[in-house]
Image (cartoon, rainbow, N blue to C red; front, top):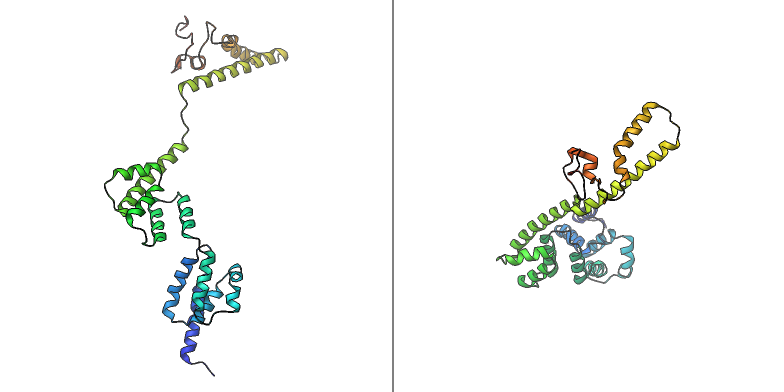
Length: 270
């Protein structure tokens, strides 16, 4: 018997609708059903049609989980039975969702509050929810919220977001900059550099004596460089009377700092 125009129209609508429905969201089954039910509602489809549409959007792994329902479906409420089974398999428990949510602290405080509200589904009063929410915020945020007189959750969430963004920006700025060394650390580093410089110059002089002289100008430049630092190279410890600190050794009259011990101030040549 040929189908009526009404039946053909319904079948065509179901085909068009099926092409618009996304594949089953294994990681978010509840949201997926919420979406497709909103799409199916205006079409006034039968229970069998809704059941078939869901099956056509399941992944291979999901179908393996509901094979018994496909092979021997219930007489009625096939769609609801399939939905209940899929949610039981893929939807995480409320406790697990909350634990996962709390561990993802890169989100804003308002996002955390919004998801906690969704999980609570109005079963938890605002006072209790506020305590739970604030208990999972970083210490600086809890301190700020404790100092405010407002008890409105939405207002507190806006304030917490502002503090969260400010502290996160400050933290990123601090991490991106090198921490300045203390004066003592700087002096130790400079002393090590001076020792290494002295060793390098000693090696240069040793190499210069071991190889034959080739050019007069090269010999003159080497002698000049060696002579300018000979006094420093001969000093092996800061206890020497003519010891110069790192800054005066390298910069002489242009030195901006001076570390003790240093003979520069009392040196007759200055």
